Amino acid sequence: MAARAENGRKNDPQRTQEDILIVATDEFATHGLAGARVDAIAEKTRTSKRMIYYYFGSKEGLYLSVLERSYRKIRTLEADLQLSSLAPEAALRTLISTTFDHDQANPEFVRLVSIENIHHAAHMMRSEAIRDLNVSVIETIAGILERGVAEGVFQRTADPIDVHMLISAFCFFRVSNRYTFGTIFRRDLSEPETMRRHKGMIADAVLSYLKSE
Image (cartoon, rainbow, N blue to C red; front, side, top):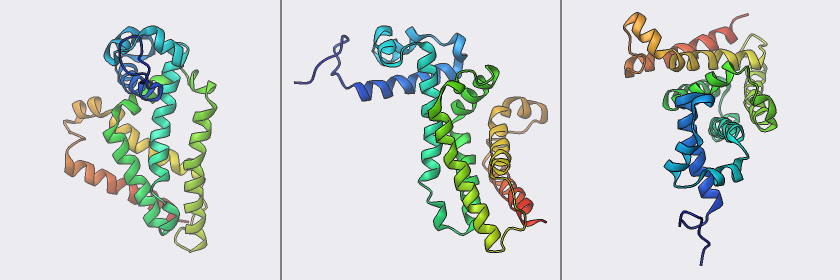
């Protein structure tokens, strides 16, 4: 018979940790690091503060694990695209579309990154996992750019980090600033036709940059 935790649930450490991370993602994204309450996370996951600290060490440790999980999610999504099997232009359009859709569907990711920027990436600096995870997207883009130049599709020898920043900046801004931007300009950035136009616009902008001298 499976062991049971102190709250009476069957003891499944991996599932318990994943449940905690899911709830903690929302808690930190909503209230920030300072405002988030471990007691609230424990209550919503039917665990205990003691169990959370046992798994993650501290509130800051839990927050860092949430960040790592969030980056792992987008990087895994990108790896599953198998972009090396696509022509360079199609590969970039697919990557841009995936980044766009991910940020739109995961506003908590955008809020978490914004919160960590407020802290000057102080917690992220402690994570080798996040640094290692984000190497993959740069290597992927570098491979696409190299193939594009070799095949004569791209004329510019671009820095893959610059290209990643260009893609991320547009996709991220739409979500991080959607309320202020929408209020100022009376425009709903989640309206389907606007999203379709924006997705095409960023792809065209990146490709135009790469195809120019």
